[in-house]
Image (cartoon, rainbow, N blue to C red; front, side):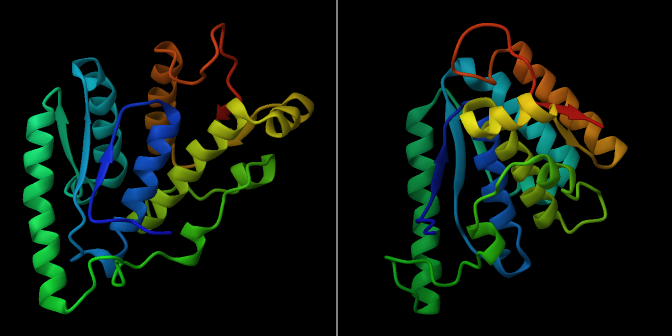
Length: 208
C-alpha cells in the first residue's frame, strides 16, 4: 500500500471512521513516530459535528498522541491548501535530509497485518482485542477492524446472510471503550450515517 506525501479526509459515516483509524494505526506505529505525513480532515460547515465526534472518540480511546497526527479544518478550502502546501514542504525537507525518494515512502513502516483485508465473521469480530492495555497503534488497528466489520455487515450481501442466520456480531472489550464505541455508533445511527439506502436501520452488531 502506498501512502503519498499527505492525506486529506472528507466526512462520511462509519466507513470514513474506519479509514481514519487505519491511518492512525499506521502513523502511531513506533517506527513511524518521526515520519512527517500530514493528515487533514476537512469538509463543509455541515461536517463539523461529525469530525468533532471523531476527534472526541480518538482522544478518549487513543489519546492526544493520536490527535497530534491530524488537523481538522472546517469550511475553509483555502486554509486546507495553505496548510497542506506548508506541510508538504516539511515532507520534502525530511526526504531530502535522509536521501529518500519523492515517489515512494520507503521509511514508512506498514505491518503485514495492516495490509491484509479483515474478513468479518462472528468469530473474527468477537475475538478482537479492544482493551486499554494494548499499544495504541494496535488498539487503533482493532478499532478499525470493528468499523470494517460493521461496514461489511451493512453493505455486503454475504455478510448480511451470516447475520441473518446467526444473529448480529458481538463486540467485546473494556467497559470504558465499549461505552465510548456504543455512544459513537448510536449517534451514527441517529444521524443516518450507517447506510446509503433509506429506511429504518437494524444494527448488525451488539456491544457487550
